[in-house]
Image (cartoon, rainbow, N blue to C red):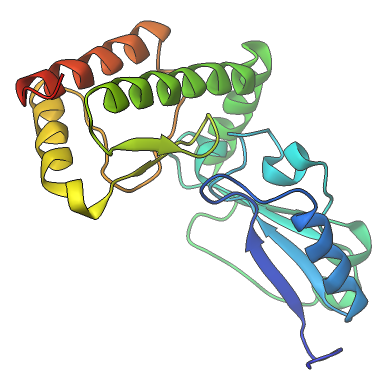
Length: 218
């Protein structure tokens, strides 16, 4: 309908359980077929499922990708990566853009350290390991306790799901977890990091088990 009238297609690469096979490849193909640039928003996914985000994890190369958040471990840093023929073009180079934290030495230093630590400690694989264990453990405990609360999604960033018919009981369990010092969100993705130990994960699973027990569900 809008052939050669759309400048670009922008999308996150991972939401929920992630895209079906071939979806990202198809989006890039369709964008190019209709004269558009394909942009992957890796702000949330980058440095979590893979250093290069969902594009790297699923083996799909976009024209442009944006990164932020985890790349600086909370500092105000972000960056754009892309194909040389686009970012290096005269049209792109002629666009003036600025921001308060542009070229901030503190954020750039934080990014350098984050990249180094993730590489040195095999951090991506570790986040997958503990994230998958959290998903497996919490889902098993909740299923055994007859609670609808469960985690979906990819290991480094699991997302909670609650059945509306069971919301009151789920929220009661989450409040009991919070009272024990464990904050589990009812709906927002939770992000694993190198700061989380394997013991932390097991303690969290046990806290959920105990909280369910408080409701006499087990």
